[in-house]
Length: 224
View 1 (spheres, helix red, strand yellow):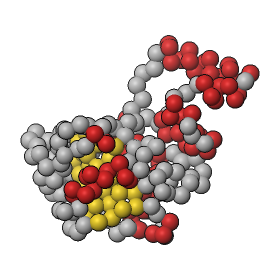
View 2: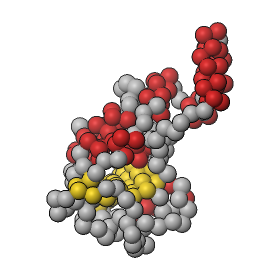
View 3: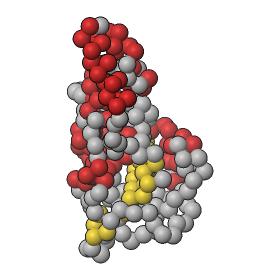
View 4: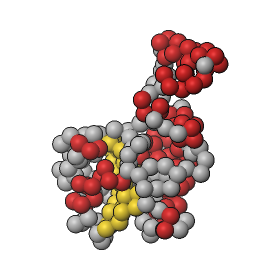
């Protein structure tokens, strides 16, 4: 992957820390965090294809496609076993990557994570049935009036990608056991004791909450 084709921010020195943004967002949403942590780490924030300053999608990407692209981008940028801070859609990508390669990341902080499909009731099924019926009769009307506001802003290609993303249940990946630095295995969990070093801004949807992502010898992922 050529660096000239990536839209990214990289600054600072030391331990690698990566920021993965949410859907319809960009690397700039982490401006406060990258500015703060660049004093202590080498921070990297990237734009996923189709967002921010990145190139358009070449095809309808699934979560696995975004994960493969991200792994290639981080390799091209020389990022090694980083701490990862992910928000919303970025959490899907982080979890997928960690499930595929438990040693790829050091620690993962998930903020506003998405990816678990809950049981859907009769109301949801009725809406889907109505959409399918209307789409057969008046497809343009259906596309304009059904689906989320977020979905309706997307191009046809991005809509196909969006449907792949939101219909994938990451429940299996989220149960992954991550390797510890001592060779053992541990289950993902919150730390029992947290040191407040990471101010998470409203830009990532967590107000003034804080979480420690630096004081463990083991590979863990936390969700806030």
